[in-house]
Image (cartoon, rainbow, N blue to C red; front, side, top):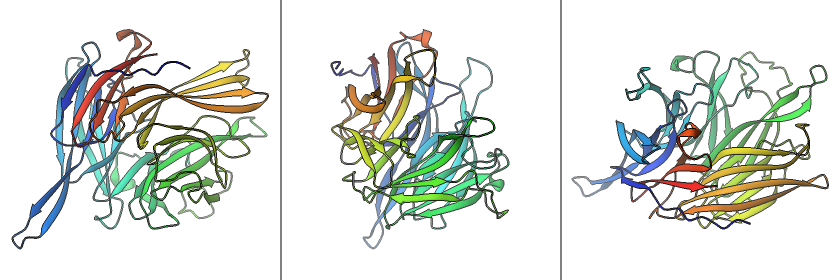
Length: 414
């Protein structure tokens, strides 16, 4: 057990609006996007208080040498930005989910001139909920091979009225007119669905090619603490030409048996199915991080309190320790994870799976705590630039807090 590090900020800046989400740009790694959410109250002539939500998208540059920040661009939007994610394959595109039930796609453009700054351009906005008073809470891009058609591309989005929807296209994702609603999924109870994760797990190897098939899963977490698992049958033919998502093979809800508050983060782990069910990392309002076996009733394989509600989880890297040169003979797997923990700040955590006597044994270890934030830490990110720029063992982080509108840069040496 290593001692827990308590890093201090190298730089702190304050934004003009509260930051709700943050992600580094994969194609220009010294830059990141911040989404903001400003709630305003105005009194009307008859004394009634009316609320309005506005926001912005802000492009910031991080200098990895001096660890300083500079704002490059700011785009005001007439809604609050709830969530923001870059596309896993088109890495200059990102989408946001908004307080008015819409999703917008943006592009980060570069000129090719190393001295010129990149810029953000909006490509489209689509109303993904028929009622603009229902906010879109979270957006997840579909991984490769999640849809049965290899040309398909799309995302899932959750809402505050218990619904989850899947939108997709077999054309260019940058063209809004080709994007259609391909499926809707209702929760068991009318409550906020805080999170959706789409993943493909390795199934039984194909008899002809010996390659394992990709099994599509959808996981959602709601405000009552329920984790809902949907498994799709990618081997079944689509009988209806209007179908674009594989038929559902199984669906189950753990009925909040293991999470005592809202499930706010779900990270599928890249390990084989255990007893035909996937293993996840979950974050919860109850301040616990859990390694979770997503069986019908669910099972907690490891649990650790992080002192604050675990709002977001980001996988930084995966290390596999081999017993021999055989890649299938793994003795240990380490997952390094960044956790945004609301009122407790940011945590760097190592998840370990050791195979002992043929059975996996899971553990959770907190490596670092950053605690300078004075309000809700909803968003954090890690610089992923060239390793030669800094010491190879150094992790360079940017984290934010909401009400005090703070952005902090800090480092951890592992």
